[in-house]
Image 1 (cartoon, helix red, strand yellow):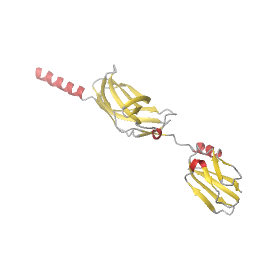
Image 2 (cartoon, one colour):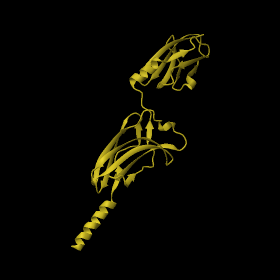
Image 3 (cartoon, rainbow, N blue to C red):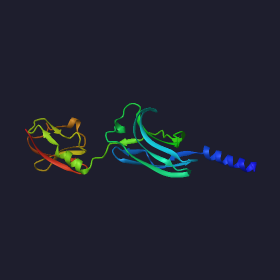
Image 4 (cartoon, one colour):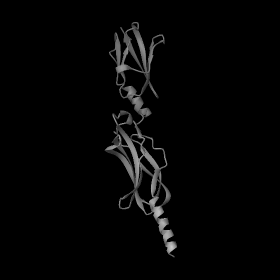
Length: 219
């Protein structure tokens, strides 16, 4: 009888010590303003609590909380699967704009029902938060706001309203339809047209899903 009780005690001790939690889905990137779904697997001896969150860190030093979600209660069991969803708030700075050692990291923790820590997963690789992609309507609206200044011009034209537009190319053709300029990069929203002959030209601004054509005069 004592051997049986000892065996049961060893099994219980082993089960308790084996309490764990791990990510089972790819959480390497997420779009700001979108809902992220995090899948995981855990083992816990009694009903517990799980919290998953993204934080802004300076290397590994906590700076601020970004977003997160919880599972409560987390039912007891072995290799239990689950998921948590939460939304990355709009206005969060994209990872590409962070400077120095600032980065976003995601973590997940398993706790008892009284919030005592049991296990956790803390990936070293930062999560990449990307800016929300512009919709077709957004792009179209932005292109409608693009204009040429000054017009007529002698040397340089400036594209006003291009700052928030997803521009992929700008081209210029003369009245005969011959392309005289094309570029996918515009420095300071300005185009040097000093080498063009005097006359009327059509400038075309192209985005991924839309185009806008504008006439200008070169003196």
